[in-house]
Image (cartoon, rainbow, N blue to C red; front, top):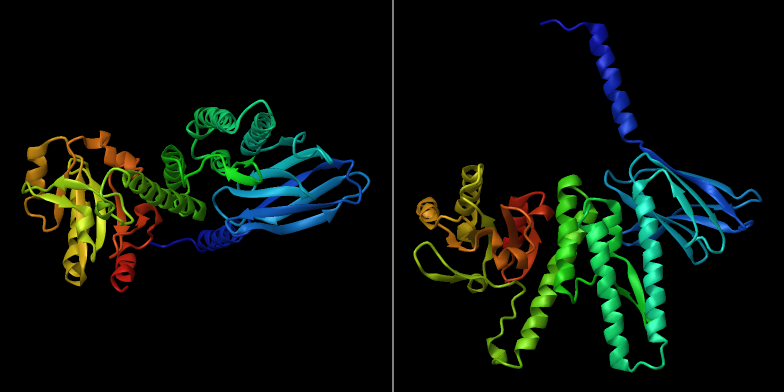
Length: 393
């Protein structure tokens, strides 16, 4: 079949133009600042490593400013405008133009923003957080309240704020940039800034982080921020497990408390034997939550069998948890499988599903030889490469 040379040449040109344009996406932040003559306005990227100055401008009499920058990610990215210690938080989606108007020095609480739904929602959240801080300060400054009363009152205010934000923002649209932003809001308690949603000490807050992380997996599968959320959730799970163990030491022999970095699982396998995940210490384990009744189960099992055959002799094991409702069907499906197969009779309503913050089936986790949970599937680009790395340690 002959291809017209003109058409072919045009296709090449169009492809080249596409590559050039796709690699040069730019966004714009424009606006006007009043009462800010001779002040320096900074545009800063709120990276995972902290704020980094992208550009700056010395404001003139008219207060007009414009920043045009190359987009650094395909997922929403976070920036802020700053003069001294006054800050306006923004999120940027690729090539959009965001318009901001404000008066200094009250820019953090009285600015106007247009051109971005996410930025408008972030403004709402920022103003809500400022209102929360005011309430906390009033309670803390009430001399008629004792220490315990202050603590109880602040806790109630914080929980009320969190419930409202979860209901109206995070759980409503967890894939949005403003939901991600909400996770990292802080409040000043005494002389310290504390996360309002704290995955280090609150089991419910871990689930909030996991919900946003799972949503970002779907909409932005390669985003570093999504992977970071998963890491935070996993570390929080480890911390909560340690806290619970410490609490239990008051009632049980401390020597019997597992010190492994996992949430242990103890279920009967397809031969009726009790199998504990923690007993696999010394092996690299793929903890797999699976349902054999799903459409692509056979394909997945074949993939796992290939890995098992190749690496089992080096210390690799699979601990597969089935959530199939039919026990007989499960036993039939697992009869010829060589790895550990257990079943949770509670299915998708399992407490294990909640404990491991599982939003969909199948889902897997990688556990190292020290019984420490390392990664979940959303963080893994190359499963075999990750296995090799863990096995070589």
